[in-house]
Amino acid sequence: MVTQFNKTILDNGIRVISERIPSVRSISIGVWVDVGSRDESKEINGISHFIEHMVFKGTPKRSAQQIAASLESLGGSLNAFTSREQTCYFAKILDEHLLNAVEVISDILLNSLFEEKEIAKEKKVVIEEINDVEDTPSDLIHDIFASTIWENNSMGYPILGTVDTVNSFTRDTITSYLEKNYSPNRIIVAASGHLDHSDLLAMVNSHFLLDPPASENGSNRLYPETVGTRRCQQKDIAQVHVTLGFPTIEFSDPRRSALLILNNILGGGMSSRLFQAVREEAGLVYSIYSFMDFFLGQGLMGTYFATTRGQVDQALELIYSVFKGIKNNSLTEEELYYAKSQLKGNLVLGLENTSNRMNRIARHEILYGDFLSIDDTIASIDAVSVDDVVSIANDILVNDKLTIAALGSVDEKELISLE
Image 1 (cartoon, rainbow, N blue to C red):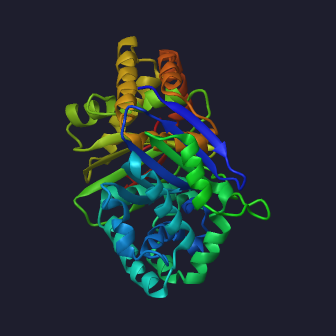
Image 2: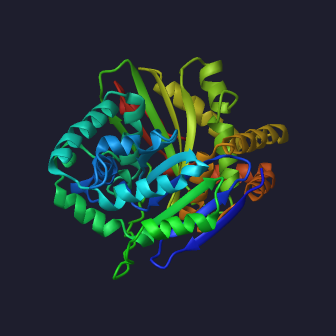
C-alpha cells in the first residue's frame, strides 16, 4: 500500500499530520487534545472525560440530535474517547465529506454551549458509566491496578472520575479547564485516507480559529514513581481477578521492538506461553493475557487473569515460571521467528483500516515527535535477536518492580512474590 506522510505546524501551533492512501475511498480524521486524566487534580478527577461527553450536547448551530446525525446521515461516524494523556474526537467518512467532518468537529470543540440542564443530565449518564465499571470486575481491576502502581500520582486516577467528583462539576469548572488545556499548541489534527494534505490544511486553517496562548501553556505532568507493592480489594464475586505488572521503557527507547516481542511471546494470543501454561496445561483460568502501553516518559507491561478463590497463588507460580523461562534463555530462534511474524502480521493487517492508521500517526507524533513508516517498523522488529528479548526480560521482569492488584475474596498471602 503506497502512502505519503505530511506534517505542518500552523502559525497558532496546531500540528496537522496526514497520511495519503490513494487506494481507498475513506478518510479517518481525529482531533487530538494532549490532555487526559493525568492532567487533573484529585478534586476534579474525571473532568477530561466529562468534557468529552459534554461537547456533543449542543452548539448554537446544532442540537445534540443534529450533532449525532451530522455525519451518520452521510454514511460516516463521529465519536470520541478519553485516555490518561489525551482526548480524541474522531470521524470516519467518505473522502468527499472531509470538509463536513472538519466543520462538525471544530463546531463542537469551539462552540459548545455547556448548558446547565445538559450538565445535570450528563452527570447521571457518566455516573451510570462508573457504576457499569464497578459491576464489571474485569474492567474494575485495571483501575485498581493503576491506582496501585501509580499511587499518589494522577496517572493512577480513574479516567471516568468518581461519583463525588462528577457530581461536583459546574459550568465554571468545565470552561476554566477548557481555557487552560484546549490551546492550539496542545492540539493535533491527524488524518489518514484518500486526501490531499494542502486541502486538509486549508480546512483546518479556516475552521480552527484559535489564537496561540499568551504564555507557554503545556502540560505540567509529574513523573510517577512506581514501587512494587501488593493490594487486595475485597468483593463478593465468584472469581478473583488479578492484574500484575511492571514499569517499562518509553516509546523512543531503541529496545521498544524487543519489548513488543516479549509481550507477544508472554501473552499475545492462544499460542502464547502464558495461555498455554496457565489455561491449556493447568486449567486454572478461562482468560489470561498480557498487555502493554506507552506514556510520556514511561511504559507499562502487565498480565491479567481471573481464577477461582484459592487458586491465585498456583496461577502466579505458573506465571512466574514463564517469566523465569524467558529470563533463563529458554527462547528459541523458531519461537522468536513466529513471534515476529505474528507481530508483523497483526500490524500490517490492522493498518488496512484507516482508523488504525490515523491513530498510529497521531500516537507517533505525541510519543515520538516523528513518523515511523511501516517498513522502518518492520525492519526494527526483524532486527531483534533472542539475546535482545532475554536482556529486556531480565531488566523488566524483576520482583522489586512488580505490582499486583487483586479483586474478590482473596488474601494478600496468596499474592506471592516473583523470586
